[in-house]
Image 1 (cartoon, chains in turn purple, red):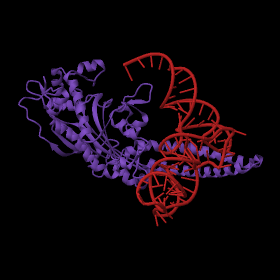
Image 2: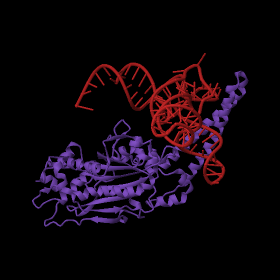
Image 3: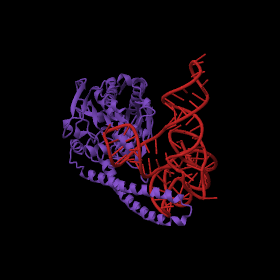
Image 4: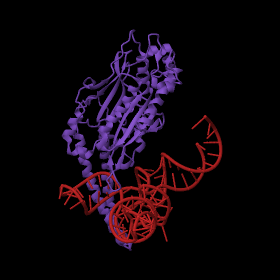
Length: 422
RNA sequence: GGAGAGAUGGCCGAGUAGGUCGAAGGCGCUCGCCUGCUAAGCGAGUAUACUGGGAAACCGGUAUCGAGGGUUCGAAUCCCUCUCUCUCCGCCA
């Protein structure tokens, strides 16, 4: 959520910056509703002040029959207050609705662009390996090795669900443990294992709701949702809290499955593991002081990159342009891994600074010291990494001419010493 | 799923025949004093949000005692609904 006062004072500039995300933006209704809100509030509060004073006077009068005049006078005032408050509630609801559907302001360093084609490549790590045979896509490799079973996944549930078998299942689990160990032991994140189902407040806090309800799985009969990313439960750990400045920055990591309806993705990535309704991810989440959030974003990005480096997977880092930015983000870097079987780079991590956008929605604040005023923290998160897509990258990058797949060295200890899946 | 108890400020905990309660007291914390160090002691202070005025310091108003609604001139206190926590029983990985 944006800061209402900042918007009021910088309406033009805010409108311009929001427009760089693409599409028309008008804040005229915001301005009117916000102004009306303050008018009504003033009127109502003035009458309440009057009533409070009168009530106190009435309480002093011993003979209540003497107070009848004031009491009936105040009865009128209370009626007026009730009317004003009813209108105020409507106005505030509308204002809240507007505020909850406005996306974050892109950071000044976010390149302005019209589509994902305008994302900027920042750097590349390792050139794609050359194959002396034609590299296959992972779904062919995985099916041939008997470790991925798309047909049975579809039988059990439906399209975009996959059954992992044997060494495939073990590889997925190895990656989860490898990533968690790296981030906790080396990068000093605290491991969390949150609920995979959250309530509406949590979804609103991080910005999935109210705008993107169609993308979420909702439990029938309950106002609970399957999480689309660990960002939701982990960021909401501190919803409604005032943290101690001395405890910042907080680094959390969590493995969770992620559930996405992928509405609007019909016909896209229909083969293989790239786009699933359920996939595993290890997430990195930070709560930091506002002044530190950009250096912290660089560190978080480096922590995610480290996973790919240790696994020896070629990748590039993209700086997202304004049009490609997620709803809540001010600044995002995507890490894209090289997939030789598909001859392309694919997103495997997305690292973002949300500044105070989520903190304001979820009311996550900190107090620098005992007598300081509470301030909103900045929240950040990034995938560290998407596990299913890492399996994809390993199968495709480490495939051999005979159809087997070499296990990257750091994973072997997690695979019971296995060096090759064949 | 059944029966009961409860939700008050950073924490503990008073407060229910409605008014002087933003809320006693204690702990904690901050500042000052005192003590040769430490501990103890003494004094003062210590919620948040919105809103009006002000360059600011600050001053004023309103709201908040789990959430929402109701009764009333007036609600932490009365009524209704919901949520959560705890205890017992049942069921169960």
